Length: 200
Image 1 (cartoon, rainbow, N blue to C red):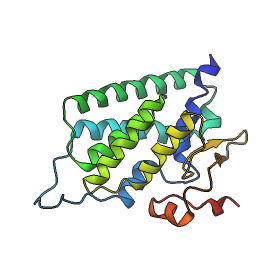
Image 2 (image 1 turned 45 degrees about the horizontal axis):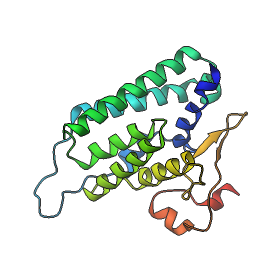
Image 3 (image 1 turned 90 degrees about the horizontal axis):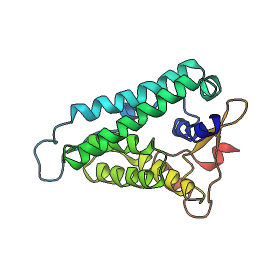
């Protein structure tokens, strides 16, 4: 049974080496800007907000319990985590199908939900949603990089930005291999991604 949960470790990669959670990063780095020619931003979908907060809450719980090493053998917790992530993804897909997401932050939040799937096509969809968020004036730069990195890894390629980390046996998060010739550290900085030189 444990092998069926190996992929869950990848879900923690988004936490990286940062001590800040994703929602804390969102509040610090992201702003919604009215679209050109509009006088106000579209309304925020409250259900999408609740889904995002729940997505973050279980990841906060992992941090509080001591990280992946502390929870990796707790099958009851892992099953709940997997089940709740799947339900959030299902409902987010429904909201998209019903055209219920309008604001940049809605698409930003939806991108996180899709990124916490296990399927390459969902990672690519997450990247697409982050691009929509950016097009609506929301600072979704980091998640746009992370979702593409995750998609590339899922199809057997190296990441290009370096957003994806995995916990080693000691519980330390280690950046996974990066294709070094495509993106420069200066370009990474434009997307709020740490420089590769920080690993040295």
